[in-house]
Image (cartoon, rainbow, N blue to C red; front, side, top):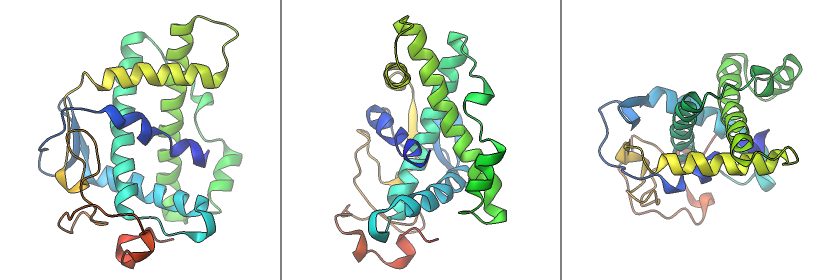
Length: 210
């Protein structure tokens, strides 16, 4: 489940139309705002999951996780819109965290963080469930596997992303081509030329912390 959370950022690579954004918003998708608070909540969960999956305890830059969080939220909005238009409604049992899984997640998150972590994971799993259903309808092949259906579904979502008017807060360091052009580690720090080649050199305040 952890690795699946890290996939959505790659789907957003072809986002276009990025520019100035509404004050207080992390991103805007066709007029629908994603608040900075929502992006921070998702990034907080991603930080913990990234640390759990990091090889050899390697540091994880905050800036990378924040960029991933906000792009994943954008993908989720577009996936939901596409699913509604296509009449696709994923069954909650296909993506919601079970009671047993919640107990496992609770081992890595504090009581105050748990609800946000579960909410974030549910949202990510829901996007995958939508992609799978969209892909299944498009392929029309009963023998198609889950991965094949999801890949086709994400292709449809990606194509839809290219049609949308999407803007990011410039402090995320993402340009109009969705290429990283700056890294700050914290949205309160002015953007500087990107150089995340060695995360170990980042100050502690710019790394994810457990």
